[in-house]
Amino acid sequence: MQREDLDEILGNLLDNACTWAASTIRLAGNQSNEVLTLTVDDDGPGLPPELRAAVLERGVRADEAAPGSGLGLAIVRDLAELYGGSIALEESPQRGLRARLTLPVS
Image 1 (cartoon, helix red, strand yellow):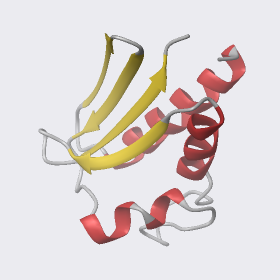
Image 2 (tube, one colour):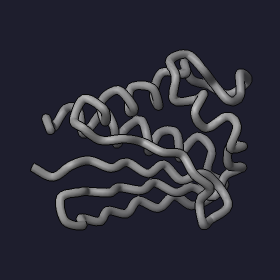
Image 3 (cartoon, one colour):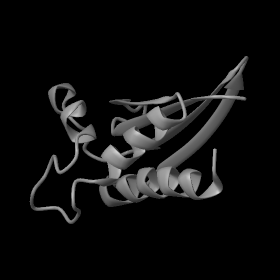
């Protein structure tokens, strides 16, 4: 992966977490076999399951009153897919949102 693309992915994920976190953000990484998994957890309000796929689309925002363009998570999805990976949004153990990025290790 090109450094600029990883910067873009992590920047968008961390910016999103900073926007919504009440007080805590956790970044973790794990490599197992041929897959690298990065998770970003926050302790914010979370996101209802029915909106999780939608906010990965360009221009879709969960809260129109919050700042942002609705492009960050779509860019993360596009870049992850470009490198053969994926992004999933889940409930965080901290009760907020977890973004789970998986990428193949070459």
